[in-house]
Image 1: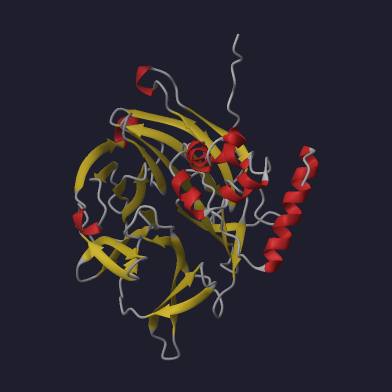
Image 2 (image 1 turned 180 degrees about the vertical axis):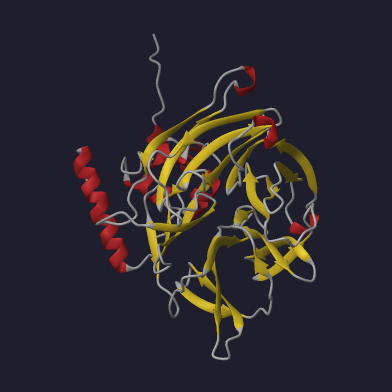
Length: 402
């Protein structure tokens, strides 16, 4: 009788072992990082983390009243009479060692979340999957009305490692009382800021979204109206592209969103004329912004649903499969309480309404991203000592030898 032998993972060739592990979702891999020193080193390897990108299901976070919450919205069977629902999985892990950080704005890029604290006095990049955070010091000082975006350089080879950067847009009045704009880039590799020259005078009329490493906003100027504005982190230049509608009415609201990291989507609603109609367009799949085109995807007439007051969408996520949008806004007629609802051509279902009184400073936002293992800590001796001490504490809790 021959005995059946089983190949153990440690005996597999390194390249095969890496290939198998790269297909496991990032959250599961974080639980395995203290299994052995080899895996710990592998999960921090930039080439491995890039190969692992896209292997995790997307998750949704909600920024509400300066706090981050993890949520899930169930839309299964929504067109077969099954009521949708939303669940909170709780407030996310703390961004600070001593107390919760009061989050003012967030920006997501490939699973990394850039957060500005209330008053724009601190800036932090956070990986919710690994728990790592990187506090960014300003070149001079941060201003209350700064805008930030997180992106990366697009390399020619798909195997090249991403080089992450932060764009800071700073607007202020100079000594001559003229409104001026300055632009700075923070490079993760050099851990430093530098000024970039650009003389654009366009205004920004929406929150930014990250797509293929670049950032997109709705921009505008009086002479030409609104347009799609982007910043290319590879060339470090702004660009402008057409929108599917023409306007320069400040009450003609436009909101951008990303669909499965494949397309951009755009919501438009004119609240100035008390329009009850909301239109959503989607782009084609594109690599370069010059190749994008728009197609109208969904038109919703809120008058159908006899709602007590006008809905003015602040943030949304598009579900192409069910042809619905998950929308969020604040109810100005009910103490600024946040509400979340799902809409389609003939569908309106509210799945959440804030119980406590809201705030005029509350500007809710959906953050949709897939967990990843991207390492964002600075590789300084002090950081390495802190990381080794943290890992040693984790091993002791798990009863593992160092």
